[in-house]
Image (cartoon, rainbow, N blue to C red; front, side, top):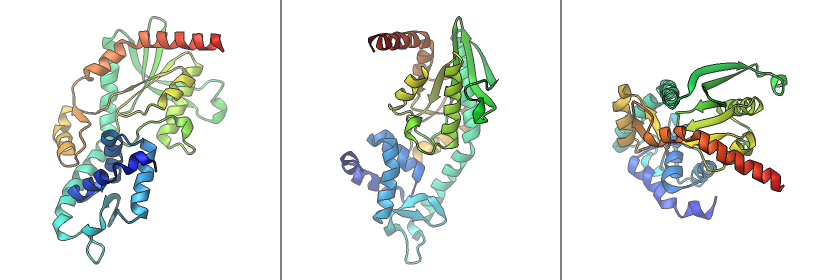
Length: 280
């Protein structure tokens, strides 16, 4: 662990003491977003806390953490925190159950925003051509294939909170979500399509992956909820103490401005790239 994490030790433990129990994913997200701990390091942090018996798993709910003081002699949660844990777990479970529908909702908002910005937009599935077909991929799905003038964009929309995206090249064993993203960026960059990732949380190291594939990314800092899930969104903020969720009927203004500015961003990036190649 870095010295930077050790300076925040008391804050992390304090969260767990105050909440009685906290989901590992929520602890990692809050540590990353509110304490500026690098995403990969948050996993090491959790392992350190468990190894040193500063935290422990909640019985029968290993994706949750508590502190040893909140367990009785039989290893079960003490009476004073059982009800609080149940309330938090109910919200967390519903949050997980809604993840797929929230992803679909965000895709719809993104396609609408690109259409409003003057693009021809559709969800697309492309057959894989030479270059990567020998890997047995077969097809590549693009959430929003956008065309305007000579610009073609392959936009991937992620609206979950299971990952803070880092440079995939730094991951020795990519998860399925990363493997899919690598396939999509690879396909787009080989076929004159600008690959784009729009997601709540993306670390700075992702710029290296962008540069490799001549792509772009937009970090929204929010998981987007439809109005039908307003109660759940409020519970996530108030009960799970995770504030980076928002009920919206359209993309936040900062994201639509980013979309409107894509041609300028891409042209500037390409000019810098050409100058770099020329100097080399």
